[in-house]
Image (cartoon, rainbow, N blue to C red; front, side, top):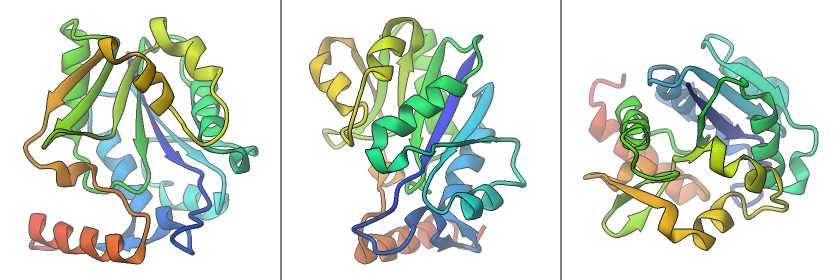
Amino acid sequence: MIAAVVLAAGGSRRMGRPKQLLPLAGRPLVWHVAAAACRSVAGEVLVVTGAEQTAVKAAVACLPAKVIPNQSWREGQASSLKAGLNAVSPSARAVIFLLADQPLVTPELIDSLAAAWRAGGGSIVAPVAGGRRGNPVLFDLGRWLQPLTALAGDAGARTVIAANPDQLTAVPVVDEAMFFDVDTPDQYEEIKRLYKAIHPGGH
């Protein structure tokens, strides 16, 4: 079984307001990400909350996802990775980490990472477009559970990937917009434009 963990705990210092709650087509960004995970092959979906915990929980309440509070979210993204890993089902053999500010991610992208891993493509699987590696990223828990739970600070899993390039399988993606994220007001406007282009009917 593959678990999907949506990291939605950050305080969004650069944005100036909680980006996981920014509206897009009538739904918060975190809802779009969690909904894509719920429609994927993932056997369970967990949403890690921190800043604006109550509002984020309410945003995904209509989805079949489990909300995991991270009281240590101010310590950085590694604390959210660990909170998610600690809550993942013991039957999970791999985990896919998704970012709450990447609302253009699709179930098909998530499924393609799972398919590459199941085909024996490596213990870390990530999408790549235009020579750029993006998120979400899958980790085989048999190989990476201990290294991931040993992380600290805000670097997240990037340090694990950087130190083990031979373990990485790249899944080609035609449209790198799927892993665009939101850190600034300009990027938020760009995400809204891209969403309208992909979903001209607004859905």
